[in-house]
Image 1: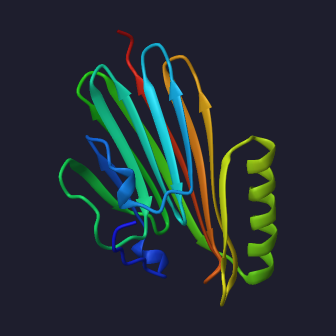
Image 2 (image 1 turned 180 degrees about the horizontal axis):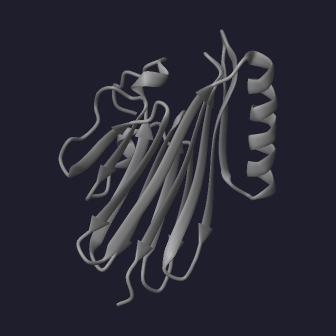
Length: 182
């Protein structure tokens, strides 16, 4: 992993959308999944509190990054950068090939509710064979990133949950990448 500064603030989380792929060496990747389909390719990486989604169709690439990393993030190819705090929705067209839609919601929960939510979302991830990365924040408790993918003929749906014990932060996102018929 390159030198990165991670924030401990919910306000630092951003959704970044690129028109190019990102390189895995920029992140502390702990899980990966790829989907090869007749007309598209999809790749997912999970790092602590971060995920990267890449969708390609007809030589057009759309990449979503949700992270609290404050530096060492590429600016080349960046289309949109949105704060994740609160509730956000975003749509983006990539030429005539790909349509992207996302919804992000963040909340800070009291300790008991955070623990229940953590258990529920990790169980959900295990039941659905999602990619799960769990780690321990020595001072604050259990943290996890859970990313679940459903593939369809012309689209991919992704539900991601990042749970950070410090402050009881839960970041939920839903993303859809779809391609138009060739």
